[in-house]
Image 1 (cartoon, rainbow, N blue to C red):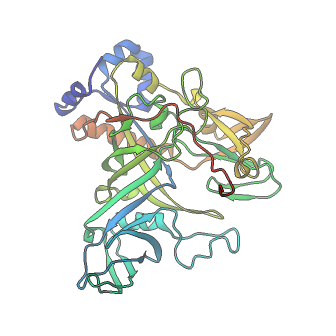
Image 2 (image 1 turned 180 degrees about the vertical axis):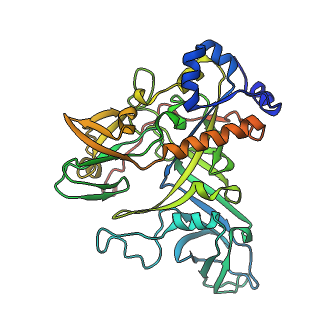
Image 3 (image 1 turned 180 degrees about the horizontal axis):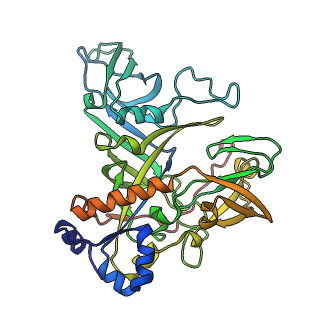
Length: 396
């Protein structure tokens, strides 16, 4: 048994043994579980891919004379102003003003909130336009100016739902191409798509949330951040394999970090034809090897992780709950899966290559003593299911 304090002392002294989730599997096979648990202090996990429930708080400071922003746009993308005078929240999926969206489907969605966030982190100059009704203490009614992230007092990424523990494999059973947040899906099961780093993914290496919880320090696009809450739609009560690995979405994380410390290559705006815009972001989470049980769970392999195959032409939008089949991530990463006797080409929206890069970057920071671990202040819920939105008449 080890403690967080003992592991952090080894990290601070530069003596910690740190491996990625990709490396630990062979290491345990070679050394054995008990010996490896004594030797290894930290296993780094990571993921990189689109995470729609992301965004950021920005503070512009006060102009002279002052303005209480009631409507505002950054690069013509609407931001939420119902907070305070010059605080706004920018959501990753917000469309640019005037975007035709799906008026002429499938829409292209060339620029939106995710792209603004990418441009901010990249240091580009952006336009702010804001309106106000004017007050005695905030008399200005309109402002237009240009700024970079360096001009902001704060630029804080605050993502309500990141790092889905597992996710659907999307296919299309209809007779026409459909356009979804899982990409374009060809008719009659001509292709499929998935979105996860599998055996590298943080919550798949800690399926019961033994070490990842509220307060856990994370690597968010290069910045040091933390888990500030369970993510929205977190549903730990789900179907699992005999080893406890979820067979559906399950857990999520709410993450935050300083955007001024982020690296542009791990913050990318993305467009989904016919669906909308989003943000691809890179996340790394270190797992402290407190005991052999924790280590064993970090040895999860792609072949052990099963993802549900769902029809996005009918079952997903109509919320029928039907799952056509389960396939392993080993099959998914091969580029071809078999569904009901038929071979289907499959592609990934997430990048295993980038996730592995993140896991190695985080491992290097821990080895250098630049990244200490934090013991969670509260656990993530294990027995909570996601509630549906019921359509009801108003109670009399």
